[in-house]
Length: 135
Length: 408
Image (cartoon, rainbow over all chains, first blue to last red; front, top):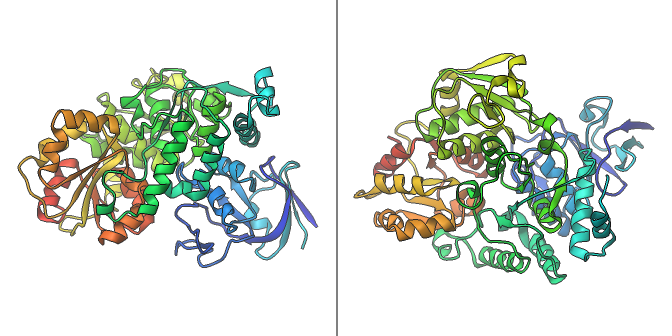
């Protein structure tokens, strides 16, 4: 097991399957939020379902509107379980706080998208600021 | 996080469930950004357009209102998603209008002023130098920070609402002096002449800066921008770069000299005519057909409304024209017969909306509009993500293009 150290995050401790890409995240422009898939053709996860996954991405983009969207997605049960970023922006962090969705960023050892592979099981502990790769 | 006695009481629920939710939300967000305490704010401004809020978000606000939520400070709103006097002709549905009606009702119960504007810094109560505020809408935040010298982060709807309820916000980011120093120094080599040029400059500077945590200082401007010009400069910069603050050396209040913001210690990078032309080249060519012309993003000031009226007077159009403005400006423009002059040509003025956050994707699909022409560098950036092929031209050329149905 490998444990990665990150900044203190938001939301509950969760365990789940990782979905990883060296790409960014906009709830407004990258997703089909009804189907629960990445829909923007240029996105590296295009066509893949994010439902119940622990997303591992580079950074979050987009305007202020995104702050409502994680909550809206979670209310319909079609949402990621957690999102890990190299750098979250303020809006997505605010959105995670409203949705009570787990979010962490700023990993001490470097680019988190290179440490975790899609399909691996990871445990995210936002209060401790740790992400453990279980297998 | 260090809390005052009153804040401890809020967190304990002694001042009601809405305030408990609000301060708990702020402590979570503040924790992620290492805020050590909360800072009192004088105003809050919330984006709650129905497209992003959805049924879940409205129910959340209704629940807070049911529990007696009341804002503690003046709180205002960003544009709505539906002009309730004109939505069916645009192909908007009753369901969209209902979410908006419910949002308005819930906000009014909480004491929120339904200003429905992204130009509150021109029309409502502009913040002043050193004024801590909690504003939503990236264009509002960047203008208020940069031109007014106020202090705000980008506050998403829920965080702006939390700030309205507690009268505070976590002290991180742009509330701290250390994050307001310049980190990039741009030297302008080509002077902007009209509104769209200012937007293009903002777009280029935003792209070069490229992050919430970068602060550009721009040198080389030969004139002081008007409020409308600064509005287009900032809105585009925030849209392309997630940039919340810029300085104009010798012009904006925190940068009376380059050295005031530490710009003298940074490497100078030129912004050339070629850089500006390259940005423009992404958005349409002479002779391209157009489906719709939109003046919005940000909403038009009374001065821009008068300019549009002057350009459309006496003309008729092959291409529909939509103009978005705030309810306050709309009322003034109606009284001054500006709305009448614009609409006499077949163009339409929308009240309290802004095109890109009023279900632009669905409006486009309902009307078969993809080739959208605007003078806003911000809107052409955003709508690329919504299935449009947006094009950019000056206000004058947008109107002339609508006459013939293609870009002049």
